[in-house]
Every structure is written in structure tokens, then in C-alpha cells.
Image 1 (cartoon, rainbow, N blue to C red):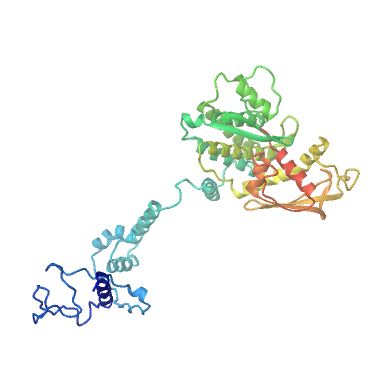
Image 2 (image 1 turned 60 degrees about the horizontal axis):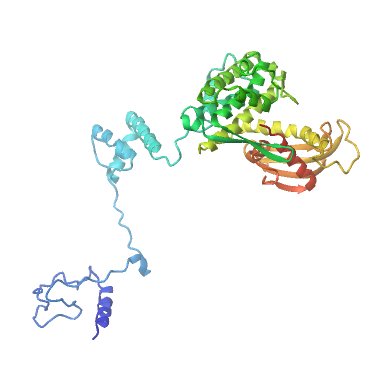
Length: 454
């Protein structure tokens, strides 16, 4: 017989081998020479011994799960809790929190926790500590934590001088950015950042550093600071008058610096942001109508504070990208306020583009719709947290938006709409659901991009 046939025969025998059966050889008294008990040679089914050595290793047995046969019924042995002293049970709490106790010990500990309040409190603290150690999520704090803590504190004791609701977004976003900056080293402060915005129909950019971005925020926030009676950050830096538009103020600050901005710019920026929030709080809610000039347009203070909060968030995202750090969107109610401001500014932006020849003229009517009269409208639907719906008048900023005159519908994610309004996403790249007048949709998307500036 060939060696292959011999192997096959052994495989067949040992595949049916049952170690629990009566013929497993447990009671045999073989002599160890390879012969059976009668000395007549090997019994049938007994493996040959090679050279009088140890028997050949049997073939692997099939798992019972692979045979198709039913699994054996589990033995239902009840777990009896151990009777242990209080000190012993207390010493087991750490192992219990780590799920490292035996079943009897686990049952004994859990029965004890229902009777001993002190041990129950200790077990809860240990379990919470274990959850913190084993968290798969990043250890970064939730961006809404500060807001929730403040709300909890203020619910218990309202502030004597509250921050106006329209200033809370600026307060929160400057605090979030400051938390991002506090651990930066010199290399992070000099990391390159590219500021992006739209001019006309073209995207443009300006290269700077993290410190340069904070200097930019310091310069433009200075428009609000000066209106509130605070010091202008450009005082002493610039000897000649500076136009009150954001780009000119930023360029003037950068030119007047003897060296590129460094980490030293953080302190004056943070002091200025604290001063702005403090002053609007002391001034009360009525100060929200104070006009803030941006050069070629004005915003009331309550809208300028939202605008500054929006720019702080956008540039904080630029900084976070430069140092490869995650940075989330604002709280939903703050994000909704920013989106609402941008949506309300779209009619004026659309009219300005039409006057500059960048938007298509109204082909339906030969004149602007009279003020207060219904005209063609576009429904802007913003999805996600902070979203909503806005009807945008297309023919005139003074026209009344009307669902009966709706000619187009655009749907955008809230964060992507903000990125479009910040000039970080081009109108062609915006992932928008569109329906209706394509020309009107294009004009509104480009008008949203035109809201951006340096």
C-alpha cells in the first residue's frame, strides 16, 4: 500500500475517533512495544509506531459547530453569591468596576450595593473613572460645554449686568478661539495661513500667519471698539488716517509693525474682545442700534456683533486647518443668527451685483418692483443645526418676498452656506439642491459669495 493510502486510512479512522467513547483505549494495557495485549501485533485501527517511538499525532477533530449537529444544552448551574465581610466587599469594588470579578463575587458585590449607600457611591465614582479611562472619543472638551456651564450658573443666579443676547455669539466665539491659541508654541504662531474671499466673480487670497490672522481680527474688531469709546488698536501704529474698511485697516496694521506679528498680539486682541463685551453689557440692549461703519456700508451694533462672531469662527477654522487641529461649528442658536444675517443681506448684495453688471437683469419686468410690493422670490432652505427657510426677493431689496411669486428653490447645508458666504467655497462648488430658475439660483449663490471680504 502506498504512503498516501495509508494516510487516507488513518484520516478516516481518526475523524470518527471519540475520546469519550468506550473504545478510546483508556483501559488498555498495551505493552508499549506496538503490539496488542495478546502479543499478536497491532490491533485493527491502532496507529503504527514508527521505529518503536511514540504514536503518530491524530488528525484534527472537526468542531461540533461545523458538523450541523445540535449544540449540547448548557448546564444551568445557579450562581450562588458569596457571603463576604463588608471590608472584603469594599476591596472588590475596583475589580467590579473593571468587570474583573468572578460571577459569584459580582453577584455578592451587586447585592451589597443595594444595601450600602457608601459603597454604592464609591462604586459609581469608580465606574465613571473607568469610563473616562476607556473613552474611545478624543479628550477635547465639547465646544458647547462653556455655554452649558454658563447657562447652568446663570439659571441659579442671574448676572447683575447680563450680556445682551445679540452679543453672546461674539463672546462665545472669541472664548473658543482663545482656548485654541493658549497652548500654541512659536512654530504654531508662525504657521502659514491663507485668507480667502471673493472679489467680483473671482476668488482671491492673501498669505499670512496665525499671528497675522489675530492681528487682522484685532484691527477689524477695532471698528466696534472705537464706536463703543474704546481705544483704537491702530492708534500709535499708523501716523496717517486709515480708511474705515476692514482690508485697509488690516494692511495698515501689518505695515506699521516693525516685525511680523507674533504671539504678543494675542493679549491686546483678547483684552479688546473682553472690553467690547463688557461695554455692550453696561450699555444695555438699547445700544444695539448704534451704527458701525465698514467704509462702504453700515451695520447696526447688534448685527455687527454677529458679523464679528462669524468672522472669528471662520478665521479660527483657518487657524485650526493650518495647525491640523479639528474645530467645530458654533452652537446651533449662534449659527442660526449668523445664517439669518447673511440671508437678510442677500437682497442688497444681489442689487449691488446687478448695478455692477455682474448679475443678470430682470427679464420679466423692465423696472424694479415698487417698495413693499410682492416680486419674484427664491426660497433658500438651510439644512442642519441652525438652519431654516428664507424667502429672498430677487427684483429689488425693497420688494416684498412672496411664496406666490417663488421662481426657484435652493437647499444648502448650514455650515457649507457659511463657507460660501465666507468665500471659502466657490458658488460652482457649493453642493446645493436646486430647482427652478437657474439664472436666479446662480445670481443668489454668487451674491452669497460676494458677502465675503478679507
